[in-house]
Amino acid sequence: MKSIKNKLKIGYFADGKWAHEAFKYLIEDSTLNIQFICARYDSIDYQLKKIAKMHNIDYLRHRNINSKEFIYVVEQYQCDLFVSMSFNQIFKPEIINMPKFKTINCHAGRLPFYRGRNVLNWVLINDENEFGITVHYVDEGIDTGDIILQRIYNITDRDNYKTLLEKAYIECGRILYDAIKSIQNDSVKLIQQNKIHPVGLYCGIRQEGDEIINWNQTSREIFNFIRAICKPGPMARSNINGKEIKINNSNFIENAPTYKGISGQVVGKSDTGFIVKTKDSTLEILDFYFNGNIRIGDRLV
Image (cartoon, rainbow, N blue to C red; front, top):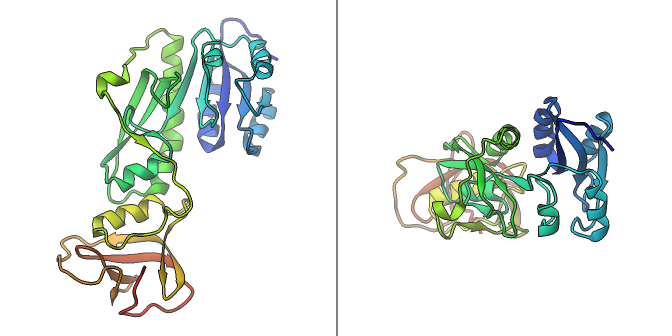
């Protein structure tokens, strides 16, 4: 257990690549000292465990971080700040308020909008032209605490879930580090979320079955849906003659004529894929996985 004077002592609750990237910024700053890393209990992040061992940092896991048993353990570290990066347990008041500077979280959403889960998927499904990353204080709500720092990033039609995820991995680390330094330097200018919007926007977790395409939607809506859950997501799914097709990429055809027809019907072939009728126009399917031949006239359902 470390105890170094004149350093900001941090307890790091973390998981996944988000946490690995952010760790690089934190460990290189000699004025910061990570007292412990607490990983998710329901999965094992071997890379995070390796990082902890490499840097001689205590590695913790516990079923309930709000239990008296765990609180007793982390009290001994006398941390100045708790930091959450992709951690999946709810912090309750006793642990939130334990450190001098309390507890902060990094969220890949433009709070108070896009609170909750799977927000990078939802921003694409909702045809947003930008997404945000926010570092905020943790309170008893879901992503409702005061904002410490927020940055906005553009989304173009060339973006998809993979490109947003890759950008968020890097940018979350940068903004988290900058937010911690602002706390350390006493330069935080807090923004209350209800001053931005009194209600905000909440996103629910996506689950099995949500990947099925509704061909009665517009071409733009289906284009956004496909790119929102492309690899490393589950990929959009449909069926042709009772056999599943997985769709990883599509092309939104600019200025495609609007006309009535049978939604989901294959109406043409292209050099790179095939053309499907949607509610309003047509969409080109580019990258897909299907065990069989696709013919004009087939229907995706």
